Image (cartoon, rainbow, N blue to C red):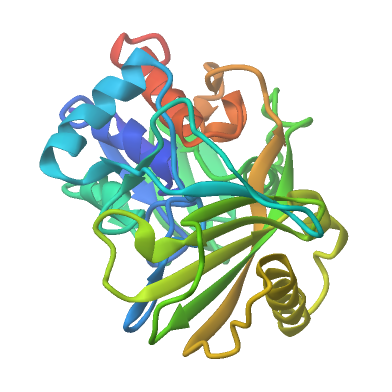
Length: 328
């Protein structure tokens, strides 16, 4: 009989782990939201779609390149070659150049995660708030109710603060989580019925509450509708995290107009997302975390750094250790 593993979190790290363990262990992923992907996120406001989380990802290791290759062959991953500039208020913009390939999933950023999730057992809309051990097996609880039991190992692949909270409520300590820190981010989304008079597809911004501007519809495979994604500077987002979303919306829209010297008041759709755990600012400095005696583990981008590739490498690394029999 296969040993049972519970994975808490359906982001790229948790999905990678579950996918690589198929056929070797009996794995169930528990995701608190209605979809998978984590920062590989897409907001749909019909007929518009916005990549409102990670804007792209790079591949610097052979392992991640090999992982992406079959998805590129299927058309699920493509290189993005935007006309990119640097912007700073009161200064002339200048062209930038990327010196490594930048990839996106298509037709939207969630597509890669959704493909990985095929054939994986996933319980959606179920937030695990406590875990409990009876002899050698783990039970999962949500609002005081047991929603899963008999697990030989529990893997936490949610952001580190969420993992810390569950462990704290469960009276469990896992070494390596204490110093993990994140920066937040606000994302402004604008949809238009008509095209925009912009001279760029993407802009890196300095000296402003805005850090990034992207013509989302310029990415390969996107719908033929003009969509704009504006992401705030992480430090500014931390300093203004408790402001109301309407106020954030007004500030970012005003900054966008000031930076581009254009009006965007003809939008058909506008929305703002508040990301509490947007960017890892202090990582654990290891591939994953394991307590072999307690039979708990953790993986995620926060183990290694702040990149999408880090999430993959963390989940894949933990999977390899499990397959080798180093943990169970």
